Length: 334
Image (cartoon, rainbow, N blue to C red; front, top):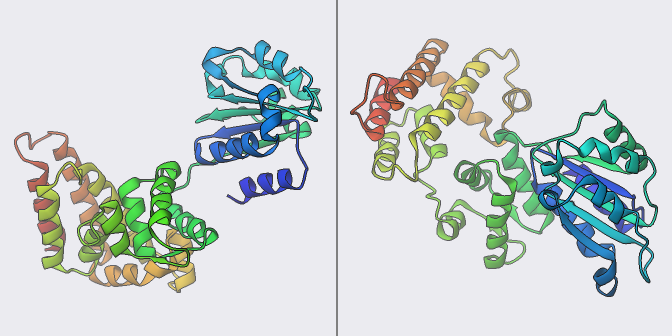
């Protein structure tokens, strides 16, 4: 996030490089940087003759280089943007010769999504020397909540940790998909608004009470009534609450509780750092650790693995996923 912001800041200050190679597993910032360059370097009048958009599947490295070597018409620069450049992965290294001696009046932007080039090879070294190499790294699930909070803060909003966690559990780690929902909230809510779980439930359709986050919390607190209500809701709405997701999140949760038991320093800051969670949720893990000694945690992990196998039809071919989840909950909490 900071690296992407720095690239934008440099361009705004007039520090524009001749080559931008944008790569990596997370496409969100690749698109953001590319869109910013497309919209800001040239004026609207200059774009007609001096801005070119090329797609990897429809071009070749030779054609890209040929376009990049053109001179701008009635403008200081031209911009050449190559979208979906990963389609050229077999020949992408051929771009190295151009990158070693790029046209100073061209801004070449290469969007190489879901992959990255070898840092040891000529292309990476050439672009690093004369331009910018940016790698968009996929965030881990435990990092996305913090990303949501920072993103909303930068836009003049705040969001509660629970509301952020609801979005993560519902939308996963796809930053583009999450940002689409955040932008919808911005249209509905005035600047300065605190985004609450109620606002998420009302406008995005995620239940603030019946979700995996609340299920984990209920299990951790040994609140059997609440946990069973949530599981019954999941059983009635299996498409919206797939068992494989619930098992995965519970497995991660109990693994973290096991890790908590092994920590010598159980201060809030240390636990948050070691478990890679928000400090806001540390007290939940302390409660869960008291309710589930190491022996019970190990048993819960074993039960989750067993249920995962059963959900794939091994030894429980005629049992619904809802019934498997109910059975799992009874065994974990007894």
